[in-house]
Image 1 (cartoon, helix red, strand yellow):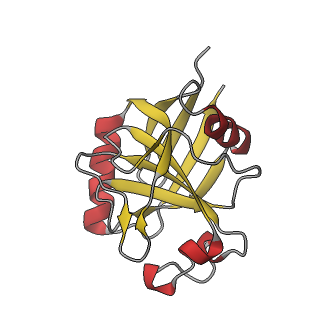
Image 2 (cartoon, rainbow, N blue to C red):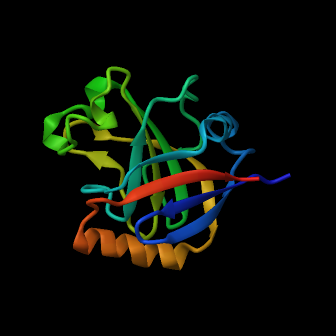
Length: 165
């Protein structure tokens, strides 16, 4: 039976529904499912283009690589596991109190709302992520809200990832 999650931009009052890709990314789906719900500060990507994400404490166990991509498409929901040395660089602009500066690194949960994304970082090169879900309802509304984040800023916005039971 298919499992679903919701992704919400809380301040903007917009949500979407995504189906977990249990066959393609079983370890990642299980890690995410077991960790939900999670809420964190919203960020709009600088490099990857049409990506909105949050940073949360690392998952245990970490799922490792599966169903990975460097070219996510609209509607992809992607997991990234970062070690502290990969994400704590002050040049990335995260506040000292953010999850990016934790000793154990951080989990990045992201969704992609438009085309032509490329997961590359000027410091580290390619940054593959695990595609673990696909948005099946509400993508146009999330895309509009995400564009608003890009134009008006993310300050005060949070993202919540939650199970649909």
